[in-house]
Length: 117
Image (cartoon, rainbow, N blue to C red; front, top):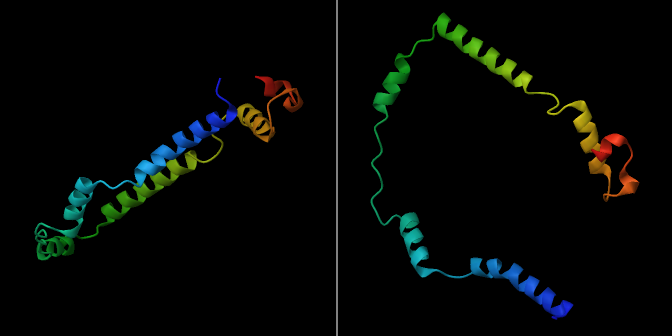
């Protein structure tokens, strides 16, 4: 039967294997990513902004638009307010808090019958 030292060595090697593989060089992958980053292809043409700017300047703000935007903001704020507060029932939160405060499971940590559920 192998001794504890062999077990430690095996565990250490299994833990180091992925780390060492991450340091390995892969020339094919390096070349492909370098070609993508350094721009071995022409840069895309930049679209003229004049048409976009003209459309943006034609937009008018109306009272109906303002009211619709304010209604949407109010609905989102109400939805966010509904998400505030406790996630679980108070009994569940209390039980989980008791268990989290316990350093190790066992009879010494069972402070109440709720903690044993």
